[in-house]
Length: 403
Image (cartoon, rainbow, N blue to C red; front, side, top):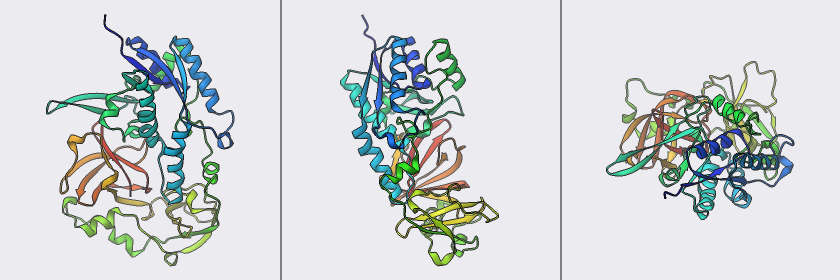
């Protein structure tokens, strides 16, 4: 008699993972629900809006309704080590982290996966809106990470750091569905999560007030907000030349296009004060509390060493727009290792630098020192520490941390 494949579902207490568990049962898997507790500190959680205890209870009730075993696993120590400490360090350094991408790579598909394997699981499953496929390349099975069928909910970007061994063990049961269908299924099953709002907080820890979260370790510190004029000479150097293919750009031009611009105080004028450069990110508009500027004010750079925020007026300020970015060699990640570029090689892909951003064409050029990504259209608010992901059609090919 054929034994059923065992799947551990990460039940988050939300509708997506609830329906994922139901669909796996329908497909004949042996399903176990597991809730990940990743958070202890209630002081920065917005009360009554998806705190972890409520989520855990909902997950347990869903498991009971579906008739599957349920257990909770406390990963708060690992979460603090790998995600929270990383966030504090990145913000302190003036970079913009993406904890959701790291949480998938480091927690759900690493620590959680290992816990599932101890329970003799064949797979782990989540409620992500993405899909998995496989192709054979030179006799080897290669797994593909594909966009979710619902373009409004596609979460492949959040999984752009997964590798082949992680994808081999992953299942995404709702990836082929639209969100309204998922809610309809949950309603038909009378699941407690059917009408529950989607979580907006940090991955698996409920809704968190980010400023208070950062202020736990990064203390407020007064500094200057400086506005930079649009006609700096440095902006002229960072322009795409006409009639030259990107593959022919020399190193100086690539660096001028792709590396962050470093400003100095004497290039602009002081507008106001802020409470800490480490609380702000490139592209940010809200929270500056500066009025009377006519055009809206945007952060174009932060200097956490000198505690200065550099800003520009208007959405088309040249400091807010960049034609390219750079990824160091050690930060380049290929999901499709068979497509990895060697130094001197280039390829044209679709790309994005944030979740739900429409894909934009880009040429990837691999040099000895790292990867240059040159966009067909200038991108707004490129921040160091964010992730750029590149796609071929619906397939996420790879990603990297922006320098």
